[in-house]
Length: 394
Image: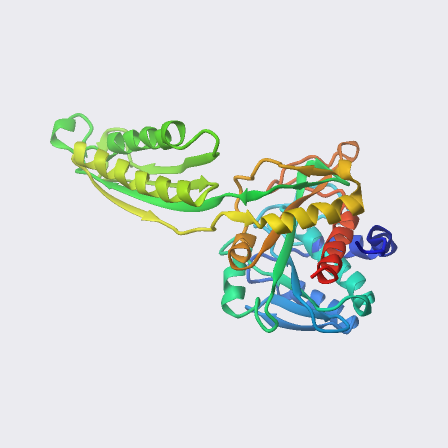
């Protein structure tokens, strides 16, 4: 195990880590528009003499080379903010109207920049390479898959990858870690139900798509409640029900839009097939026509068992065993790191940034979301420690 106190190393650059986070929080940019964000990171990397290049328009890949040949471990951060108004009363609130870092990516960037500085300082003490990946558009289309297509995991070939996400559910100074699936898969869908419209007083002359669509909404819930094991969390949500123009008119068409969330590949395939079967069966029974569009969204994020075991050992060394919480529940939220996890052995964990005494308890993707910035110091230490120890253990 390493003989460097990475937590002390991170504390030495505490102010820099926090200042970087606040800059990104004040100037958020959404997916594939992170030009100023990218420029700021490139300037930082250049100041340290770290080799880097821009990929996918606003993404960045950088290399910290050790003192000899060895394995390659990647550390990843996302870049983008959300189209949301920042309503916090703090000095570092967003200065860009309608845009906000409401999911912690500002913290992720500052953590990875801090880890880069620490690892670059100690590059003569490890063999191999640390690859830094700054991913654009995580919140929208999943920038990871585009970066993979551009070869970000090659030249040099990545042997393992580590990522993290801040969590308002965990106290600052703790982390959550688990084996197996970490984040759900997502399949957005649209169901178009076509009937025959007419006067609401004469339904016998019509084929009512609203009644058929209502049957679909209620019947689809039985996939979760009666067909998928209760041991495997799953969700089918209808978020939009669009149809009709007046109370006395039966419309020609109704559109349902929603999302499927599942935590295993098997459940994902099953839920998609059953959604189609149920809707097509109801359509046949109720004399409507149905068109179904299902998007192949983010896959499940699976952690590699060996990487989890390795990470647990390293993290307990840094934080103490009582601050590493194992076997947390999987998140039904999606995470584009899943594309990386499909390609190479991966480890993804949750970094506590909750602080009740400071009032930092608000949920992600909300206009009051904030981070306990002291948690970012732990994040920089953990990312540095796992990369350093991986390279010196393989």
